[in-house]
Image 1 (tube, rainbow, N blue to C red):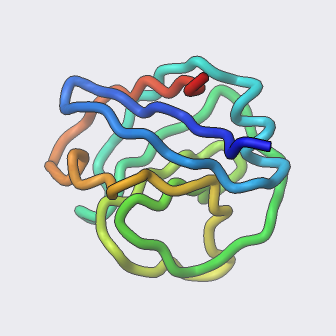
Image 2: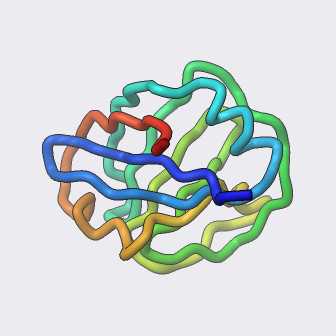
Length: 117
């Protein structure tokens, strides 16, 4: 079975991400396509709210450039630097192929997220 992928695009460019295999990503796929207004947080990530929460899944504290995660049940995050978060950690939704450095700039941006077929 092929790995599920999504395209994340904005006025700054477009990236493709491979999704993890968990209940949260399956629920995310069911919401797509969607557009999320994203804010910069700590100069390491873009964050925004999903229309509704996703199911719980295993969490981890570390992330790297390109990690797509979930902080709270509806708090979508795209990391463009390496680092770690405090407990309870993040649900890993997937990873951007080649990193997410296009989002490494201050300010807000609207991200369009859609499945890759």
